[in-house]
Amino acid sequence: MSSVSRSVSFKHRASGAGSPRLSRRNCVARLFCVLVVIGSVLTFLLAIGIGYIYVLPNLTKSFHDASVLNSNSSDSACNMFDGNWVVDNSYPLYNASECPFVEQGFNCLENGRTDKDYLKWRWKPKNCNIPRFSIQSIFQMFENKRIVFVGDSMSRTEWESLICMLMTGVEDKKSVYEVNGNKITKQIRYLGVRFSSFNFTIEFFRSVFLVQHSWVPKRGPRRVRSTLKLDKLDDISNEWANSDVLIFNSGQWWVPGKLFGTGCYFQVGNSLKLGMSIATAFRTALDTWSSWVDTVINPNRTRIFFRTFEPSHWSNQTLRLCNVTSKPLSETHGKDTSPFSDTVFEVIKDMKVPVTVLHITPMSAFRSDAHVGIWSAGLPVSDCSHWCLPGVPDMWNEILLSYLFSSFKGAISCIVWENFEAIKVYQRSEWL
Image (cartoon, rainbow, N blue to C red; front, side):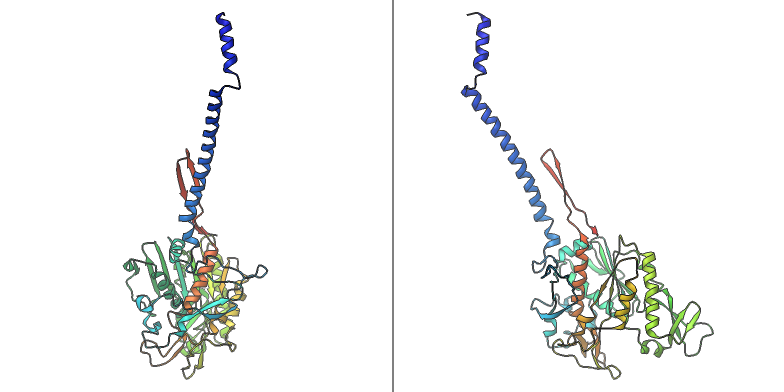
């Protein structure tokens, strides 16, 4: 046989489908391709799983494994302020005696109160649940931010409450401190507590009227010792602007005794308004505040809240008589409404910058059992305006945190594949 014939014969045999050697090679090649595909899919799923396990829980885990504001009805929106108080033995959230930022006058247990039932109540909305988020997820949300409370002593109480709630998750207590070394007291206009390990501050500015308080005007009547300049925001307002969360309140000082009784009257421009009612003055002041917010605040950075009026439970305020009950009231007896709260709603509806109203008036109206009463810091009179800590302000903060988490996006993971080996996970956290 010629060499050409042998070559043709070899090629014919090599290309034959029945060759057992080539069949094995084809099977091995196909199996290898399948294994590569399966390996790639498993690697991808592993990366997603790692991101889910180590990233998402920081935002989604809650104290009671409830991570969202769950609605009991798909047809009805949740109104967090329509509900009732229920007993919950997991409360209180902290021990005031272990928190260095609680004002002595609000620590009722240390001041001699013996009953503890007032500590065991939780607010339960009718159509949803208020989640209790893990402290670590709050730290992640607050990282590199300024949380600022502005208002009166009720605002300071909520400020203290939030700090003490977060302190329970801090291992190194010395890493949390007042930035100027000040003791917590009502005499200081600015207090700021820094959580240095997470690089955020929770601050309080005392501004009971929100507008500018000035002393005796020139050539004013003798009865006028000071004025509220209703068309000028407080002169410390420039300190509020560059914050990430702003929580305002006002109302407790807008009463005759703290205004006219001290010789304080109203002023607009250079004109004294001696006959102006408190209701009209409060509305004018809030209009000034709303104009400032619409002009100065950047809504892409700052989330604005306004907390409504906090009801008191005096049996006789003139005589300073206070009857602290042993449990919440079953009826609010009209304390669930307030003209101050109504004015807040009226002003905010016309604003350009979004403002969330924390309408705590109705829920707080039931809590005649949670006031300081006679358990203050050695004061000779009862107090049915301020609240014990722990207590009702903690619930205000839980609602505040629910709103913040609903507008916060974190743990948005972007998976970058590099040669099917290196995986990088990026996180982005910002307000919606």
